[in-house]
Image (tube, rainbow, N blue to C red):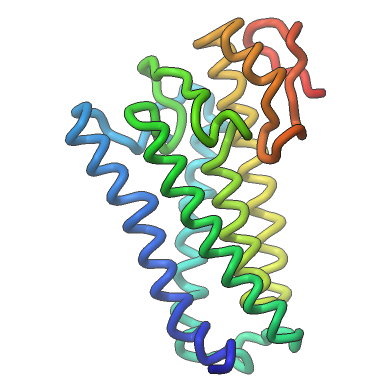
Amino acid sequence: MEVSTFTRTALPLTTLAFFFLAMVLPSIRLRRRTGRRAFVLHQEANPFQRVIGVTMGLFMLAVLVWSVLYALLGDAGLGIWQVPSALRWSGWALVAGSFLLIVLAQMQMGASWRIGIDRERTELVTSGLFTLVRNPIFTGMLGVVSGVVLATPSAWTVMAWGHYVLLVSLQVRLEEEHLLRLHGDAYRAYAARVGRFFPGVGHLHARAREGQVAHA
């Protein structure tokens, strides 16, 4: 099967599966387990968090629209670059692996998983995948977006990738400041030894003062 033919079916199905398995299902699971809502992007007092939340929502909508347009128009209609098929298939492999990473990390977070920064205290998770990186869910999401770029390479998807990397970087720094305020020395020590998105990369200085993020 040609990769373009596979992508016209797989991309919209993968997008729907992502929304259900990585957002809807974990939200339902959290609600049943704790009675709390998973979506808390609107709760953070910092207005910048709300701006990021709205922008991420628009990004997800754009992904859905892109998936539908690709199913309808294919490569020619969206200006997909002509690259080796192996590169595009590798994108799908990255999407699949990253998707599994997200689902596993969400399960390991348990009752601490949220979409956004919760006003209520959540436990600090440092086991499982979180022994390797501090933000395995975001690592997986970056992997999914990167895989989609490889599977449907174009000027549009490359620009979207850069936009998403910026959004995630800003969101993670807000969450790090929140966790420093919430968990103090425990998070400071954890962040000093575990990388942000990749093992060994993006440590925080152990001497960073509470509420401040100092980057290694």
